[in-house]
Length: 229
Image 1 (cartoon, rainbow, N blue to C red):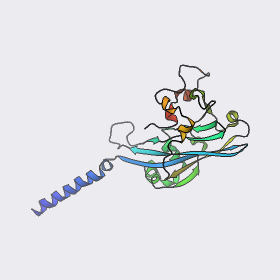
Image 2: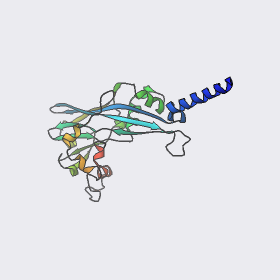
Image 3: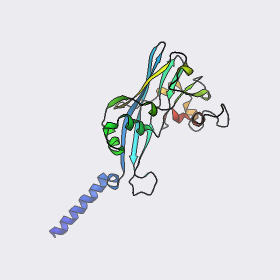
């Protein structure tokens, strides 16, 4: 009778463990942290700085699940893109890149863990700021006319003067793992038309504006500047 009661207790504890730990016991893991991207631009009138804090959601599925992504880390970002006003009415935007949010953080702060799992876990409590390597920069764009979404064009981060005039240089891009709140609402003040272009592209892909066409520019929707919902 005592042995039976002990077995029942063990089973009950196991059930409770599965209940509370659930997916973790089965190999499912998830992490979340906030990171801030800041753009620093030198101009003839002085240094200009602008940034944005986003939240990164990262997760992994156990290897026993029969899908190609099983065992790896998937992630998505929520928030809005970093931007800086280089000169009156002229802005530099770092578009949101959904796939490389974790990659940029992991490569910028490799010391937080030996692999993706340890780094993702450490990011939840880690705090620090560091310069982003050139090969981990996001894509940059601007608008010839900020009120016209179709005037979007790519910006070469190594040659800002070609877009913004002599003496304009991208000094550095920094990434901070932070406890700051996610930036919300700043970009709508600059791009009030965002709500109209979440389901349609800013530039009609059938219009050949250059040869060869810029596939990045032709694929952009408002989601490149702010996630919806």
